[in-house]
Amino acid sequence: MLPTPSSPPASLINTAARVLARLNDRRLRPLGLSFGQMPVLAALATGGPLPQKELVRLARIEQPSMAQLLARMERDGLVERAPDPGDRRVSLISLTDEGVAKLPGARAALLATNSRALDGFSAQEIDVLQGLLRRFLANLDEELADQP
Image 1 (tube, one colour):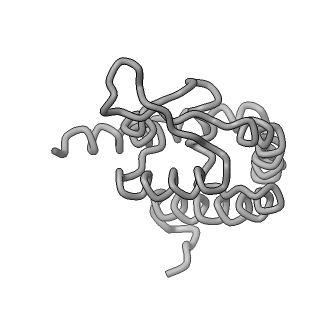
Image 2: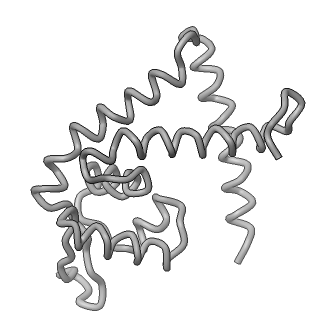
């Protein structure tokens, strides 16, 4: 079912997320990246080497999906694993030099999509939209936290 002007907000947000993902994938493809990799690249770029469990939490995806994503990213030379010196049972994931080198192009691609999506919005409207979406996500995160 396609969203209509009377569609529930969650339906509109879901549709917007899918469209953004498609456009971002299109812009990232020439860099050898996909939009699904962006939360991992961003977390590793700002947080340094991280265990897979933390990447699962930050990216808000399930453990099996993260394992597959990291395997592909490792195969593509974007990330590497090393044993955690504090706990040999845990691997720390970090960006490779190739992964770091792709970050500026990835950021530019994502900013281009963001700019296009917000074309015609005032600064005040963008602030309101961001605030509403943060509250929306906080409500959903609360619901997830209540589940075992």
